[in-house]
Length: 120
Image 1 (cartoon, helix red, strand yellow):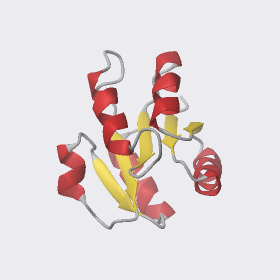
Image 2 (tube, helix red, strand yellow):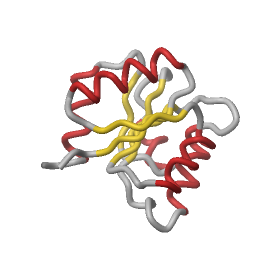
Image 3 (cartoon, one colour):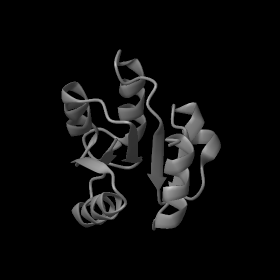
Image 4 (cartoon, rainbow, N blue to C red):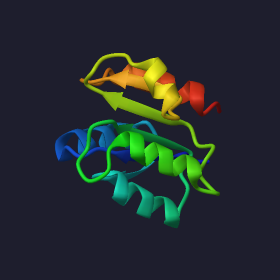
């Protein structure tokens, strides 16, 4: 069974590279350029995991996560925050994320986090 991941990232190159990498690992990947678009996608289909940037225009990652946690169907999804501000694990948990990963991304470390949150 293919696992679905929603990537929410406002920088097109970063979003596309991450999506390509995850697809190469066998995941089905949906992308959104900000939290508003991410919420629209969640209304259509609930993925198995969300990876979101923290700093985005229109709706930042914190507000996006807050709204995801209020949805009926997707509230329990594992969420990983990508941030250029270093490892902010405690802050991430306060806003409802499960993990953080620093930018620039270490793709192997990200895969390790995904596998911990989405056991086979």
